[in-house]
Length: 194
Image (tube, rainbow, N blue to C red; front, side, top):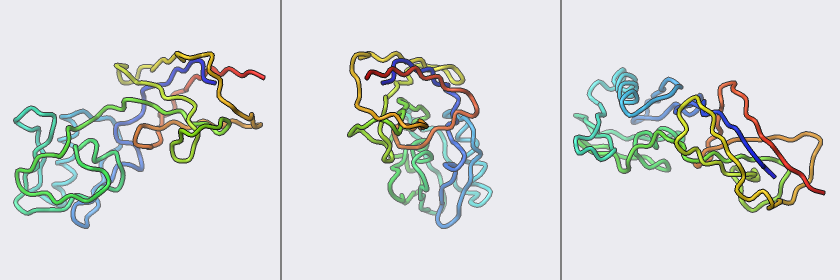
């Protein structure tokens, strides 16, 4: 069982391998790094306008947490992962046809709310990418590059497990994207009972 965790909030908003999407049949590649509402607009517009000079996004003037797309020719946005659509406020499972002055479907989100810790030695019905979930750690209001501290609220609840000679842990967001902490160490305190 996980008793405590200290996890760095050092993962990128757009990680390596989750930084591409398509406009029509053209692959657009964004720089893997941290973004906020405004810096993402700059990156998106710079990279998209290299191939499509008349496509832009801007913050909605309705102040509703969405982006407004401007284009002189309709286009198709096709996600290749779940990260970019979340940042754009788009649906992640399908292509979307974009018309001029169209708003994103959902509010944009630059925050990961929970970190799921997966491991290979427990048995549970709760899985992410076929990995058993040891714990869900709420990120809360931790600032970027700070530690997310977690203390198990139910330390007496033991999960059935079989201890292998090597234990592997994995970390995911709620969209099942693996998190890379960019070389910063994770500290986990585990408890076992015979």
